[in-house]
Structures are given as C-alpha cells and as structure tokens.
Length: 108
Image 1: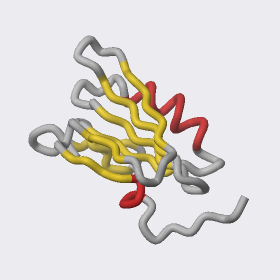
Image 2 (image 1 turned 180 degrees about the vertical axis):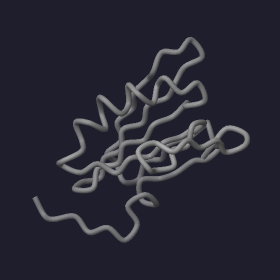
Image 3 (image 1 turned 90 degrees about the vertical axis):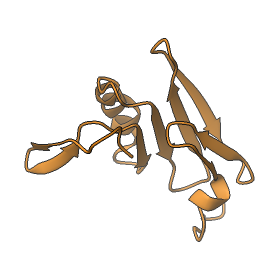
C-alpha cells in the first residue's frame, strides 16, 4: 500500500516502492534477523512508512510495529489465532486466522 501516487526507483535492477505506508514481511530463518533489524531501520527513513508487519511462517505469530505521531514506534506481538490486528494506515482489521488461512503448522 502506498501513500498517493506510486513512486518507484530502480535499485540494483529491482523496482522499489519509495512511498509505502505498510510493509509486510514473511519471516524465514535466513532473513528474520535482517528483516527485524537492518531492513526495519532502513524503512524508517521513508517518511510515508507507518506500519510494519512481520509474519512468522513456522508458527502463528505476527509482530506489528506502528509509527506514532511523535515518530516513536510501538510494538505488538500477536500469537492468538483468534486475535485481530488493526492496520490503521490502510483502514483494515485483519485476524490471524485470515493471515494463516490454509497454513498447517508442524506439531511441536
């Protein structure tokens, strides 16, 4: 989701959106640390960026970051599949059941 007209820049041959309001990352063991740290720090430099969802693929767990009016970020971790997240940047409420629809997790 973008703020206003879509603005892209080619970075190493890949078109990158310059004005997102929401970014969603599906975590993998090889990318999780980079997604939670380096990429998040880089995304914060985008003035339109307001929400970040990190979705685990091996268990029902979503981390939701929201930029506050003062520029600080709040973090909410949701693990209850019956719970919902409000994505205020796009005016949407999304349940973990919807996020993980059709996903089968390995037994612990």
